[in-house]
Length: 192
Figure (cartoon, rainbow, N blue to C red):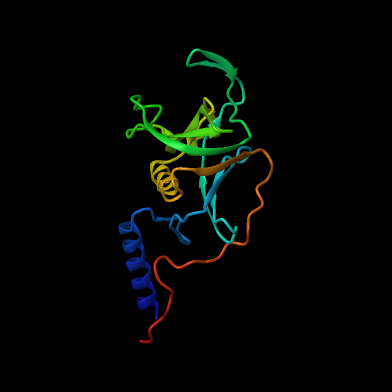
């Protein structure tokens, strides 16, 4: 029975890696669906993608804005990422391959229909930012994610007709009871 289970896990992992938009966090895979939305817990540096009915979610680490005043892009401002309701409504490619990672992808946030300077993007040092002792309040206000998560968010944006809801909050995020989900098909065990 162990052999069948290990074979299932290995095959499931390989199949998930072949499905566009699928991401696995070790417990389950996530496939974008229309109606999904994003919540970012600004105090705990954690992002979540929720199903529209809140029946399930996928979590991922984030880096958010520094909690101090900064001078950047010709402006002096408090860099902490604002707590608001936003929508991702455009994708841009930036030329800076350090701030926006190798791909330069930038998913722009809009607030009350207006384009903002905020968005989701990668960073050349995203992995280090998420694991070092300096903390995850390191950006100039944007939400920094790993490249695989940025790809997933872009897929969510496309599945949701280029109008993906995002809520950034300083209050604790109420998480639904997480379902254990199989990676591609229902789990079954075949006898020896």
